[in-house]
Every structure is written in C-alpha cells, then in structure tokens.
Image (tube, rainbow, N blue to C red):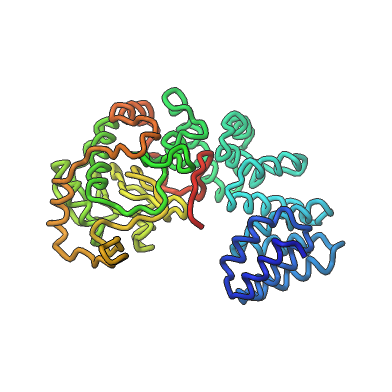
Length: 425
C-alpha cells in the first residue's frame, strides 16, 4: 500500500471524511484505476453513500466490463467526487464501453467540475469521430472558452448548427454571448492568464469593479480569499460602481432594497452616494439598481427572481463568492472573494488577552449606511504588487464593451476560467 493510500485510510479511521476526500483528490490520477475504485468505495462507506460504494466495487471487481466503469464514473459525479470519475471514465473509454458518448460527456462534466477545461478539450478531440453537435461539440466550444483558447472556440462555434432540441438553445446563445464579449474585450484587455477583469466579463457578462491589492503575484491574481470586510472597502466598491454606471451611460431611476439587513445597509449607502430614491425590490421594476452585499447569502427564491433581468434593471453585489458562485451572476461585482465577513457582522479580533468575539453591530441600518458614506473610499495600496487600476482604466474597459453588457440571463459560471487563484479547501 502506498504512503498516500495509507494517509487516506488513516484519515478515514479518524472519521475525517472531508480530509480523506481532499487527499484522495490529489492522488486519484496517479493510482492504478482499480486501487482508486476500492479506496473510493471505502470513502463512500464512511460517508454512507451506498450506491457509490456499490458502483465502485462493481467496477473494480469486473475489470473486463467497461460499462461498470461508466456507471461508477456517473455515480462519482452525482455524489460530488468528480476527481474519482475522471480515471474511471477514462478506463471506460479505453476498454470499449458500449456507451462511448455517455462516458465521454460525463468525463467532460467531471473535468469541468474540477476546472480542468484544457483536459476536457483534449478528451473531446481524442474522440472526434464520435462527436455529435450536442452535447459534445457544444462542450468543445464551451470548454475551449473556459480554457482560454478563443481561436478554437470560435472555430468550433462556427461549426455548431442550430439545435434541433430547443433545450440546447440557451446554452448555444450563452456561448455566443461569451464570444461576443471576448471580441469586444480583446482590444482593451489582454485576456491572458492574469486578466481577471477581462475574463470575468467574458465569462459572466459582469463588470468587476476592483482587484484585491494583496497577493496578486503570489497566487491570488486579483481575488480575495477570506475577507474581513471594512466600511472603507464598501465605500470604495460603491465609488467604482459609480464609475461603471457613468462609463456605461446608464442612469437608473432608483435603488431597489433587498430584504436582508446587509443588503439594505449597502443599498441605503448606494442610494445616498448616487443621489437616487430608495424603493423596495420588486422583480418587474424597471430602470433600477438592485444592490446586494453578497448574492451567495440570498434566499433561493429571490435568486431565481433575479436570474431574469427586467428592462433597465442592474444588479450590483459588493462581494461575489468565486469558489462556489451564487445561483445568479451579478451585472457588477465589487470584488471577488471566497468568503466575506460584513463589517457590521459578528467577528473575531485579537485583543489584549488573545482572540475575542465582537458581537454584531445592532445599530439601525440607516446609521451604518451613513458610516459607509462618510468612510474614506480611497483604494488600499496593499502590498504594491497588484497592477495599477485607476478609475480611467476601468472606465475605458466599460466604454469599450458596454454594447455587449446586460444581454441574456444572469447565468453563473461555476469555474474560475483561465485565471486561477489560490483558495482554502
């Protein structure tokens, strides 16, 4: 037994299923596929995932039955361990599964879940003779975009016919909008492996107002990890929201307040800074700016309402969770972080006697909003390693791309795309 497998089993013996899964994820591609299946079965046993455990053991025990590997890979994806699906589905394709298109598309979905888009493209091209327009050639287009290969994406999209199954129309239109945004972005932004704003706009259709001033060249590339937020940072993103609205030529007639306390605080501050009246949020209200603190904390029913944009409605959120994106993509994101703690929320600080808990600020929402308005919104100089990002650079980006903004539904992208950042597992 390898030392890595021993470590996985040691973690399982300690009932640390999450730790065991993380360790297995790091070695799944390097293990012999039968060993990978058996250790996945043990992991599934500890997590009480009976169907996954059964599928894993069936695949490992019948090595000359490639369809068993297809079923095992499918169950891995269903139960949230796509890293184990990848070697299983590769084995299914290698040994001649009777369902090659199913195995291939599931392999691509597993790569997507792991954000390994270039490998998804390689897998599709390796089986080009069996590719159908939908889903496989669409996936070749989509994953080429997320891998940063826009030339291939444009070539493949040009080969995509209108889908016979109308259910594929939204997906095709989504890829089309991504490529349109890329065309507008390319003249003003490099769309390379460090162009967070350019790729964020290309993939989501949303403008990114600020870049994190810390750790840009040390793994973060403009994103935050855990953010202990501050009133000054809230003011800064609201100031940049104003820059974006002016550059886009958009003048909403009101600020719509969502029901959550944090959303209302930020919405009240935005209304005062922009000189706009406040109204309660209504899904069909037009020409309004909807303000959220973090859409990842939003009620699911409210998220569904926001997926479709009313005429002239603009959705701004201060803190966008990028590791697990919310169900709705903002039209403007103040910043990208893994998790944010509101300045007025309960938090821990280091006191004279060590860590101490600070309770939530219970003052009225309007009072905290006024503090945001009074806060210094000057950008944090950070560690001086983030590229300069003055207002005019953001304004120029928006002016060059605004004719492709606010098109289509607010569909999130569950991937960082070509710009990777470090995060806590």
